[in-house]
Amino acid sequence: MKKVLKSLVVVGAIAGSLGGCAYGGMTTVGDKVVIARNDTFLFGALRKVFVCKVSDAGVTGCVDSAEKP
Image (tube, rainbow, N blue to C red):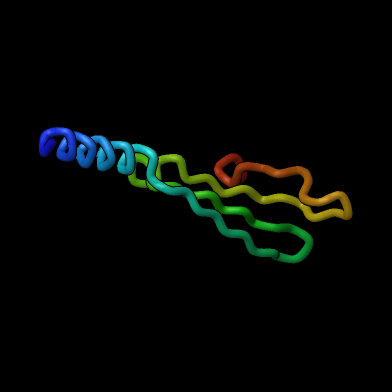
């Protein structure tokens, strides 16, 4: 029984470190909105920031900020 419990704890720790949790944030700047998405997978290796234009239809024309000069 102790082996099973220990195995479950180890598998849970590994799954938690690989999956991590994601969070995001957003702020407006004039007629544009900056959307940030971050996760803890590989210490934030999949971090993204998008700049989008706000219109009546919602956010449009999103561009990855890494592509902007």
